[in-house]
Every structure is written in C-alpha cells, then in structure tokens.
Length: 120
Image 1 (tube, rainbow, N blue to C red):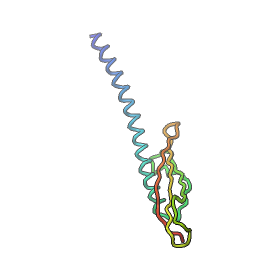
Image 2: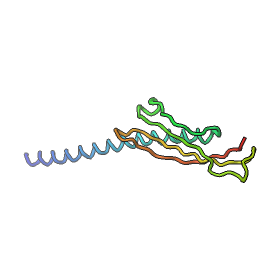
Image 3: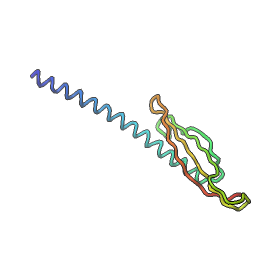
C-alpha cells in the first residue's frame, strides 16, 4: 500500500507540473492572439487612411481584457515617381510596432505594409 501511494504521489506531482506549464502557455497564446487581432485592426486603419502619418497610443483595456498594450506607427515614402507634382503616385511604407506586457516583461512585434496614394 505504501509503495502504491508513493508511486501515485510521484505521478501526481509530475502531472501537476505539466498542467501548470500548459496553463501558462495557454495564457501566453491567448494574449498573443488578442494583440495580433488588434494589430490587424490598427494596420487596416493606417493603410486605409492616406492622411495618417503614424503616431502612438494605447489600446483601451476593455478591448483587450485588461491587458496593458499599445502601438507605435511610422509612415514614410517607400517609392515615388520621377517628380513630386500634384496628381502623381506615391507608395508609402507603414511600420507598426505592437507592444504588450506579459507579466513584468514587455513583448513586441512589428508589422510592415504599403499603401498607395496620390499627391494632392
């Protein structure tokens, strides 16, 4: 009976440590999934608005389930025609950095995109 109880205790400790690691990974993936969706929304806003020149801000806590997160965007000319006259095409490069707090550690990733606009 003592041997069987000892074996069960060792197995139970191993199982609990595995479950603990799985729970941490699931929480980290949930946070990552949230910020990826927010990054897509923010990048779509930046690409759709030709007047946007970037900036930075934080996402509302109620939108991310209390996760502290934010963004920083920059827009610059990636390619333009031979002259910069009104009515010519320009290709803007958009860089979006998303950050969030994973515990005490700040995590980030960067998205890049391009948008077309006409010089006005």
